[in-house]
Image 1 (cartoon, rainbow, N blue to C red):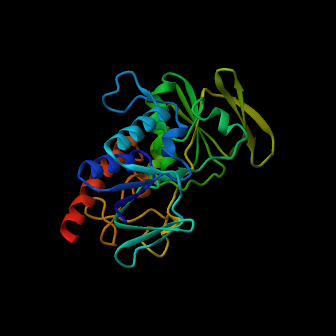
Image 2: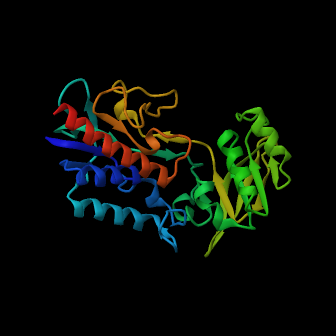
Length: 305
């Protein structure tokens, strides 16, 4: 029996662990398959407050893990594969091992959808990105491309247009999924050029990173190389919530529904970070939700145990 089990070790889960453990709870963190979450696949983070010269994503997650463990949280490198939140105590399984908890904080995050390009593993953070807010500053006064046709793609293109010399928005279809107001705003931006209907089939790179993208015209089948310094994939995220199906309320896209900050519909179960936030998706907002969840778990256990 743990006081609180935290599922996931991104900035939300590790911040929750720090607060819950400092609040006197016996805290067990299940790291799962990607310890540290999406930040382990990023390079330099310049918008984390208090770190003047920036910090590498994996280093920030390693530091947060070490801080949580120093305080007394236990980090278990196993994945939660099943849960039963129908009674007390709350029950979870890591394979065949059953775990009991008075409270659970879910911070399993979301996975950015990518194009499945052969170079993604080697060029992510070296020209390829899934977050304009995170990485746009590194492409100041440079030429970049954004792939996607929804509101997120339009928002990222307009954000990058404030920083970059030119933004090329690439979409597979002549019709956009984005709202009309976002499409019109994007079309009117003088720094944004649209290439339709194209898809990205490959990349071009040198030793320093990405130098271009290989595009295919969907009507003619012809390919061409577009010279860009950055390629931003804005084709959505997939919340890592499948294990909680039939246990917790989700929206139509699979994000966990929360109210009163981080509470789910099940008493004692909280959700923090990208698993419940499809709007901001920043390390600092995830950490803020983790703080809230940790403090709410403390109060819940004080009131009910």
